[in-house]
Length: 242
Ligand SMILES: Cc1cc2nc3c(=O)[nH]c(=O)nc-3n(C[C@H](O)[C@H](O)[C@H](O)COP(=O)(O)OP(=O)(O)OC[C@H]3O[C@@H](n4cnc5c(N)ncnc54)[C@H](O)[C@@H]3O)c2cc1C
Ligand code: FES
Image (cartoon, rainbow, N blue to C red; front, top):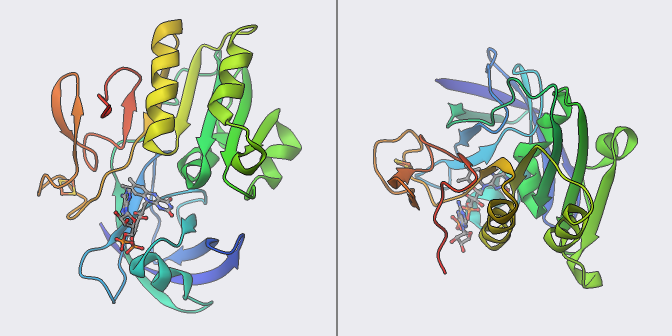
């Protein structure tokens, strides 16, 4: 569904990552892990961006500037209008998780779709977030939950730290999102340990609604559309490149 949004705030969190909050002309009833297509007037195709929080009337996004589209979004200011379509894609499974011990593992801007999981009640939850140089958007999590943070610049890697913890404790379910290399590594670890989970993957997109097949990824059941069949897939489903 198409919406118009008005920018409520834009806050730079690092030199190239910002938090954007918009008020929508309606209410987007989203599932955690879903995304919207944000239109950038300087680009024909909209940019897929995960919903990182908000009640549906207000939505928060965490955006990393990597090219012209995200640079345009980074130039938005309070009161500016944006066009968006959503909610899109398949979100995380959060039903029936109240009795589960859960780990949430994120890398860089990949923490964005994981942040709304703070609103879900688990038996126990631990967060593991890794960043290149500087951590961001962690204030609420750090206050309420066990959180391990690594920085690449210190020679640390969040998947290695999590794998070490897995040697002495187990989890029932793991939610994760980050660079492809991280997804592949963590998926392999979880498959070996027999731990269930879901990951959110990325692909370059065009239509964002399942019509053009630009975003397909290899899975054990053949090629699937990341925008429609994903971006959330079960552990073991996605076949990552070597
Ligand atoms: C489901 C989904 C959710 C996303 N959520 C977020 C989010 O919450 N926050 C955020 O900052 N970004 C997110 N992204 C990535 C974001 O859509 C791209 O960074 C953005 O479209 C780039 O647009 P651009 O015009 O700035 O850069 P472009 O000029 O289009 O690209 C700049 C560089 O980024 C690479 N790139 C572009 N799109 C992708 C992609 N989808 N995956 C990997 N590399 C890409 C290009 O190959 C190029 O090297 C998400 C992507 C998907 C598919
Ligand atoms: S972007 Fe068109 S099918 Fe996914």
